[in-house]
Image (cartoon, rainbow, N blue to C red; front, side, top):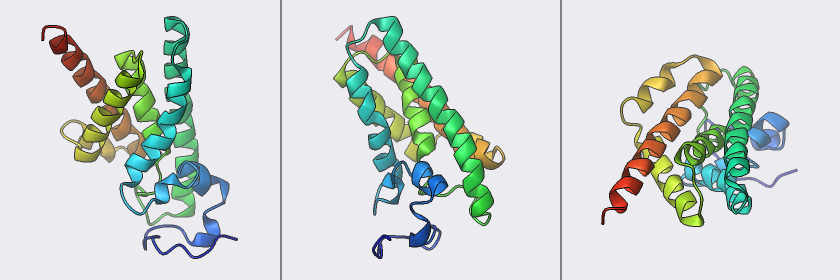
Length: 174
């Protein structure tokens, strides 16, 4: 049994549900219940394995980035569907951060991150797009059900990767 968690919000599941598989997985091992910056906390947890995957041959590393992006996406859809079925009053639970894992790994794959600095830069850029939700990222939230939870993060991942590539290109001339 978990102790009382004073930082739970009215739209969060009750404390007794936190260890149930859909909530535990959807919150990336409860990181989505951080008192502040829940999406950032979830993205940090999702990104940690990326640092351990560095240094592999390029094709293997890119395969891992893509594999993680696909796995997080699939899990986000499956778990997101279960969460929305269990808590139908909530359209996009703020504590659900599994989709951040899909977005950051899509960014890493498209950017072809090859160093710890690349991962940190991709992380910051992804979080910027995910938090600010500029056009067209925000439009993807309109997708129905779990697709809407996931799609805006994938769009943010694409935008972040394009930005990283652009800044990498500019950097080579400085």
